[in-house]
Structure formats: C-alpha cells, structure tokens
Amino acid sequence: MMSEVKKIAVISGDGIGPEVVAEALKVLKRTEELFGYSFETEHALFGGIAIDQKGTPLPQETLDICKNADAVLLGAVGGPQWDNNPKELRPETGLLAIRKELGLFSNLRPAVVFDCLKDASTLKPEVLEGTDLMVVRELTGGIYFGEKFRRQGDQGEEAVDTCVYNVTEVERIIRQGFEIAQKRRKKLASVDKANVLETSRLWREVANRLAPEYPDVELEHILVDNCAMQLLRRPSSFDVIVTENMFGDILSDEAAMLTGSIGMLSSASMGEGSYGLYEPVHGSAPDIAGQELANPIATILSLALMFRITFGYEDAASAIEEAVAEVLNAGHRTSDIAVDKSKAIGTSQMGDLILAAMKK
Ligand code: NAD
Image 1 (cartoon, rainbow, N blue to C red):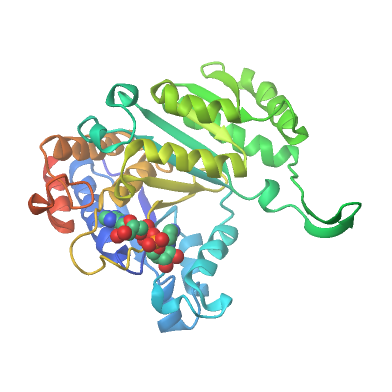
Image 2: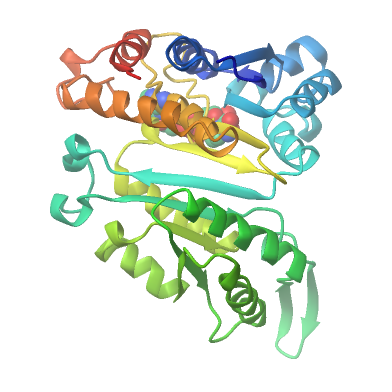
C-alpha cells in the first residue's frame, strides 16, 4: 500500500549539525524501505551557514520551505565565528525567529533512561529503572514574556517581571498534554503553584475543565516544588508532565539529567495541529565538529518523535527506539557515553549499526 508523501524540511545547520542530520536521514530512508512510507525532503539554510551565504540567519526561502512542509528536522546552529556578530546576525536570533514564525508554542522533551546507561546517571540505578517521561513546556507565554520594568519604591530601586497567561494559551498547551498522554501511558501530571499564583489557579481550573474530554487519561495536579523532588525520588512514576514556561524550563533540564548524556536527548517544538520542529537538545558542539565524534542518537530519536507525534507512524517510531536500545545493549558507544574511550565508535558507525538493527 502506498502511503501519502509527507514533506520534511531539513535544516542541517552548523558544527556537528550536518553530521548528525546525515545519520538521521539514513534512518529516514531505511524507514521508507521497511514500512513503505514516503517522504520528500527539502534542505534549507539556517544559522551561521545562512549568515555566511545569504547574509541572514533565517532567509525567507528557508521559512517558506518550513511552512510548506509537514514537519522540520533541525540539527543545530551556532559557533564561535558568529559569537561577536551584531544581534541580527547571530544564529540564536534565527532560532527565536523561526519558533515565532512557525507558531511553535510548546516544547516537548522526553527523558528516557536506557537500562544499559543507568550507571552513567548521578542517581542510583534502582531509582531510575523504567524511567520514560515527557515534559511538555509552554513556550511563548508567562513570566519570560510579560512586561518587565524598573521603578523607584519606598526602599529604593525595584524590578518587576509580570506573569500573564490567558485561557486560550493555557487550554491549547494542556490539550496537547492530554493528547500526548493518550499516545503514551495515559497519565498526565499538571504542574503549577496554585497555592500562591493566580496564573496557576487558572491553569488548574482549565486542566480540570478539560479532563472529562479525556476520560482515558488520569490527571494529577502537582505543585512545582514537589514535582522537582518527585522527579528525583520516583522518576519512573511520571508519564507526561505539562507545565508553564518557567517551571518547564527548569523541570525539563532536571529531567534531562536523569538520563546522563546530552548526546542522547531529543526534543520537539509544536505548533497548532500536528506541525512540529524536531531537534536534538544539544548545540552545534564546535569543539568536536568534523571529527566523527558526535553522537547522532539525539537526532535519530528526534526523528522517531516526529514519526510518532506529527505522522502517527508508531511502528516506525518504535522500530527506531528499539534499534537504538539494541545497539546500546550490545555495548556500542560513541565517545560521549563510552566508559572506555579507546573502544568508542564514530558518528556514522553508530548510524549504520542503528540502521542494521531496525526491524519491521
Ligand atoms: P553544545 O550542546 O553544543 O555542547 C556542550 C558539550 O556537549 C560540548 O563539550 C560538546 O562537545 C558536547 N556535545 C554536544 N552534543 C554532542 C553530541 N551529539 N555528541 C557528543 N558530544 C556532544 O553546547 P555549547 O558548547 O554551549 O554551544 C555550542 C554552540 O551551539 C553555541 O554557538 C550555542 O549557541 C549553540 N547552541 C545551539 C543550540 C541549537 O541549535 N538549538 C542549542 C544550544 C547551543
């Protein structure tokens, strides 16, 4: 059976970006062969390379390619050669702009502990056992975007940051949390600080109002300070965590540390519907670029996320995740996750092993 052709915009970016994206594209091709899915990829310039070739980090053509696609796969951008550029000619300015232009309002960060890497974490292996959670963070509202100013108070100078959320913003992110939970183990932890913050009370009201629409999902409310503790005490009990911008910023980094290595962490930024931009959490790692040292797993797992969330290709997503687990269980490691660095394998070798392990 021929499936509909899905369009993917591919942005390799800078540093190790092209190296890790190349491995993910090999996996993409293998998925077509194994499962009969069809993808059309279109490459676009973004970040430092776009500054050098087009004079701007986010050329209009790139934006058009992304908007015209069903999903975007991004490597990483940035590097020391652009660090002293004026703000509009910095790769990070492009990152903020692309999120805004594509209407991406949430960030998804899975934290999965692979059994064979449990010893790489700072937590006890028995605490980590079975951890597989996803943090869904609101990305465009809250205290990071509220009005900020200084003023003179009774005691001298004061600084003010305001935290504002409207019902629409809260509703769309909580719905996304419920929908993702439905595709996983059907447990949603809504994180707030409803004992002191008005925005959190609104958040909790909306979560409770929406809950009856998702009867198959078990909703738990948890205060952010307690959540920070429980993530370290019983990480495996979480499935999906949905929370506002600043809490999500902190909790997603905390959750990331459960797993050990930055080279393993995938992420997605979602807009309306199923549209999403998928990328590894790590940056362009200029210190190891061009040396076959980069771990491509974060990018390959980001592709698996795309298959699951944007396309609903659960079979392909699981095949990739199982192949990654199999290769790691067999003892293969890139140098970032290797205990014995002399036995570490290179970027493309890791990609090839994952390809070979993929099964229908
Ligand atoms: P980084 O994530 O690039 O690197 C941090 C450390 O982790 C480095 O030692 C690097 O070698 C290592 N590392 C990262 N990814 C790895 C991988 N896949 N395999 C093995 N080792 C890996 O962070 P940084 O050094 O702070 O930033 C470097 C550049 O990346 C900067 O220009 C920064 O602005 C940019 N950056 C981009 C993004 C993005 O594109 N979304 C995110 C973060 C940083």
